[in-house]
Length: 413
Image 1 (cartoon, rainbow, N blue to C red):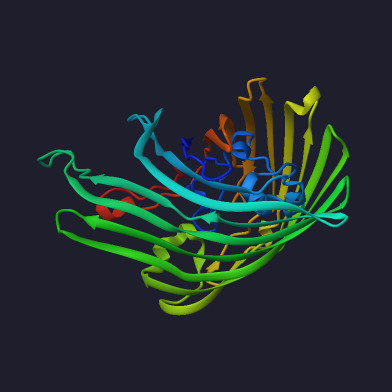
Image 2: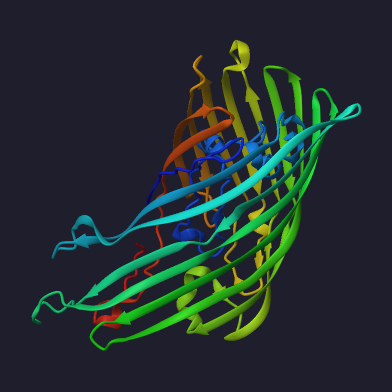
């Protein structure tokens, strides 16, 4: 599976950004994928964001750094995501000799996200404080998959007649309204906290459209009015003008929601074992705590070069969904790194790398290369970021071929 992210969003007021997206892959259907901070600078730097301000989204990335915001800033960010996904099965000759991996499904689609935030810092007596407000995605549930079913009988006419379309469609997002505040405790120490009001929805539909009979069969899981609140505590320490270290702790949160299950729920096996019954019911999804640490090193005079590193830990083993008996998810460590150099004309060049294992299987990881730049015009800053990411994995067949006269596949795709 390859992901090509092409963001572009002009800023308003005093700052602006575009960002790359967290695209939902098949393995993330149940939990959702990371909804990214709509800040192109951090996106181009491998999604690092803990030890430096991120414009209007500083209250979301690390509230402790709000007291280091020099001027009021407003940021609007968005992204366009291009996702390419292939599924393959092995092809053998008549003597059971392996020939090639045969692609039987290729999906190419676009998705998008947006966010906005404001932040400001003020001197209050002997202290400097900062405040922030933002709206940004937390988890992304967008996904689309489609495969054609052709007549396997070699003697029918016309050959390769289209029998059906198998589809998996998912939509939805979990967003957070964030209210944050930070204070400069010492000239080298900043502390802060934020409160996130989470709200969202998720729909997952699996269906087969029988072309010849002009009918369809399907299963659906619909999660509505997902709501919850969580806190984020952050800190930042600056022992030297060339070095900053920071960290955040994000509390676990239980999201209350209204669930509606329709159709044969066993067909949604790829989400996990569905414990919930058909019909409407009240449910709770618990997202786990997160701990992240980051650092920035500025080796050049005038601080025109930044080297950034973030490391995060998410306790996915504590993820709970009252609708699903999830297979054992594993706790995940992820790493992100980036480097930025600002030329004397003020034009920045940024590169980064990201490595993120999957909680479904920590031996399956997404690797990504990021790059980008930006420019200033008066008091407006416009940034752009790109990411190319890849992940490979194996999974069971989503639709049983025996339903259409073929053989059930035993091997994983």
